[in-house]
Image: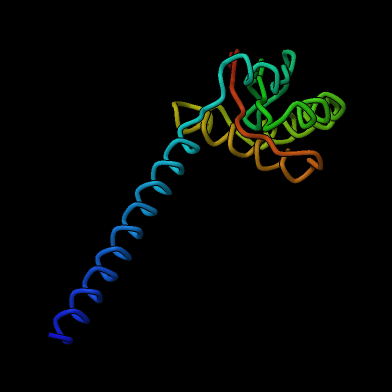
Length: 142
């Protein structure tokens, strides 16, 4: 009789602990899912973005390129820093383009390579935040 009561109490405690664990797991999973899906709105992206006016420069193969970019930072402070570093941004873009040929920039992969290279180089300079994305907004090779 005494063993049955002890067994019953132990089972109740075990089931209670298991239920509490499952509830905590579900709650934490839902909270992480909500925080991960909170993408910035287009207005927030624009507030944290900086336009790079048209740059015309030579490519490594003698052709030339006209390109405009929009650079998205992770905060408004980072965007302000990018605006102050405008001359460094242009310098990085010109340096990177001068190493590439028209063939390197062909297709989607070439543009993605250019964007990621510029992003990496700018992030080396940044102190207030980081560059999230580089967008090519205008692009002509002649």
